[in-house]
Amino acid sequence: MKHIAFIGAGNMGGALVRGACKALDPQEVLIYEPSQKAAAALSAETGCQVAASGAQAVREARYVMLCVKPQVLEPVLEGLLPALREGAQAGEHRVVVSIAAGVQLKALDQMLARGGLELPVVRIMPNTPAAIGQGVLLIAPGPRVSGEDYAGLEQALGRCGLLERVTEQQLDQGSAISGCGPAFVYLFIEALADGGVQIGLPRDKAQAWAAQMVAGAAGMVLQTGKHPGQLKDAVCSPGGTTIAGVAKLEQGAFRSLAAQAVVTAYEKNSRIGK
Image 1 (cartoon, one colour):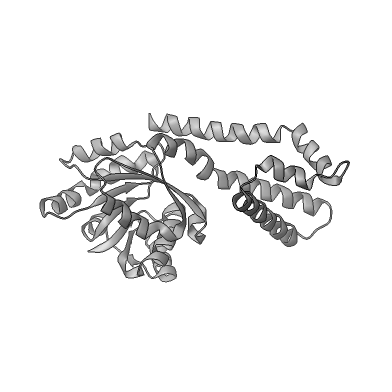
Image 2 (spheres, rainbow, N blue to C red):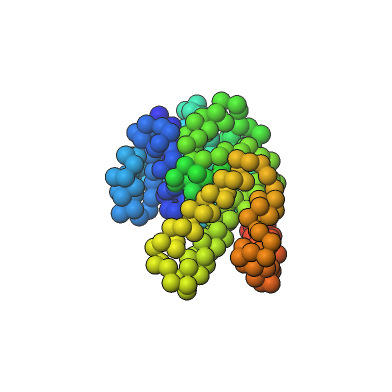
């Protein structure tokens, strides 16, 4: 039996597949992706195995990763119930893992129960930087998940970045930062690069310098443990150029808008769950 199967290998699923293939022998990683072209490309890139169907992927792996959108999770899981039931009847142990935003552990249990199943379930909220080993993965295991189950999941995803075991409430709250946040940061990097182009820099240089600056500034927060405001103050000389730029951002309510982006993302996530 292979270690892990991914049902869906789009942007987020593909990022996790790439991380899993670095942590495990790629032969232990199985994917099912409706787009045969995308599946073939990912297999060629990582060495993972491609299943002919979702049912085949389920039958051949211990961990079943549901990497699909919330609105299609239920029909996808329903289609996998016969294969999951066969495995349960044969005494095979499987763990069902979902990355679908807003779909609660209780709802996953109920979907499985309609097929007469009681299986360990886990929710994970990852982000796309997992593809380069710099992601944040928030993990909320259900009550049936054993220590061995959790350790096996950590083994598969440990190369994706920071893994944090959290409560389900913290997962939904935190994903508004860690899951949605990369898009907010990409907007910021793009805007900085646009500003650089406006003052005469080549686009490629402005973008590269902005991206490296963001990576370095984030590293300062993580490595020094200092409050971001303290680090900001260290850059702002009295009457200098940086404080002038900060003042312009504050005129546009930059910090307030960033905070509200997180709140809005969380509220949207909560509505999906209902």
